Amino acid sequence: MKFFVDTADVAAITELNDLNLVDGVTTNPSLILKSGRDILEVTKEICSIVSGPVSAEVVALKAEDMIAEGRKLAEIAPNIAVKVPLTHDGLKTCKVLSDEGFMVNVTLCFSANQALLAAKAGATFISPFIGRLDDMNLDGLELIQDIRTIYDNFDFRTQILAASVRNANHVSQCALIGADVVTAPPAVIKALANHPLTDKGLEQFMSDWAKTGQKIV
Image (tube, rainbow, N blue to C red; front, side, top):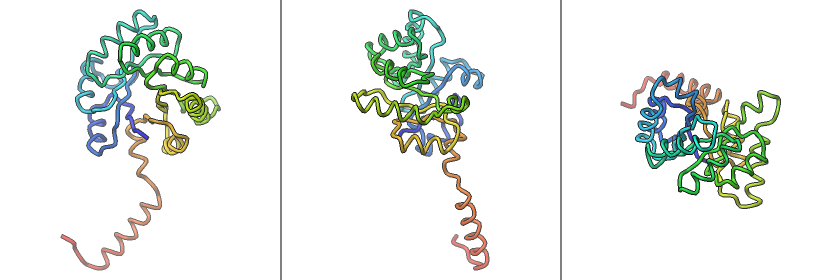
């Protein structure tokens, strides 16, 4: 499973990329706002750091305007994936841009039917939002499973990009289900290394080592 980091924070991306933990990046208008930077400028810098897909989102609502924005964003770098919302206009945009050879990430997916439409429109990625469904007492992971089943049934090439990932359990469950990609904030990716028994074992080892009075270097 590929790891995308969900942020526009260049320092955080660089840190994880240096550990080979970044296969791509996803951004959205909220993350651009948080970065405090110009969307074209910061996206170009991210693309220079990461060789994998970098999702940059359109902000128009009509297909004609989305297409124009998508083409503009795609000019930033060859690894741009144009991000469009899962609306009728977003699907129209997906079809046009996909036919032109651009990667397209269809976002804000909350149902298997929506995911089916995105695949038929030629989406490179579909982004179902796990955490936001969980917030409504619905099972976000069940949606990932349903999409996996549908895509496998019909051999769709669209990659499942699990989004709105809130915790380490979301990541491991998505891996078990067979999501192609998971995108998560830097803190969640870092948290995957944490376990209380690891900390406890290390504490014991350090205590015993101190008693030996030895040094390695």
